[in-house]
Length: 286
Image (cartoon, rainbow, N blue to C red; front, side):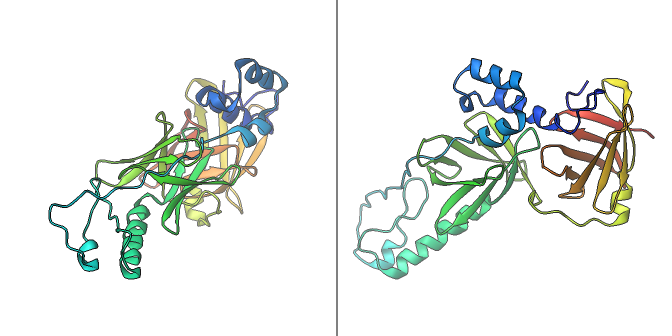
């Protein structure tokens, strides 16, 4: 049985437990010891742990590119603008003029734009925003709004400036950057929506998500989902508890405090299933 859907009527508290358990098992560095993690669970400090302890480890030294020595050196500022480091980044010499520095800054900024966007962690609750400020890439943890500057090591690899934890951007089959691997083991997926902004959907878009959904592992557990003025209302049919959700995209919804995500799968204009958190799948009755 899904832990956040207890027949005991605790649905208003336990959505955060799924997020807490996921993070304490996947990110052990956020709690100093196993005993502390165990004690936290026993005391049910779920929401506090979730909000304060989800850490994408921050940020270390910037490894700047070093231009190779050219066999034939020409002391012209114009020619200097073509000097490239071994990893492909333009590196102006110290005697370059303002025009060359501006040109290099623009090229660096444009290359970083391909990483910009919102990236969703596996539990579907947490997001990291990558954005360009000046000539650098920054990461913002949306659950606590902490901002970190990233140092670029090569075309796809970055690390935190303070602690040196790694971030690697990955391409999909079409050659577009579609995910980012944090700490070498946690893969986040780039999404095409802003998780901080409620998206306005039409009545028809909400209507296609309505229906009765049955839990994949227990046919006795059912949800009734209906459209509302602001989004959707989910009712647990075993205890009639209701939870309101607002949309962030046509298929992604969250509850009021952002700890309970719903991700719908839609085919031919109608929903076929809904996933709560990472992998709690509910099939829609036909």
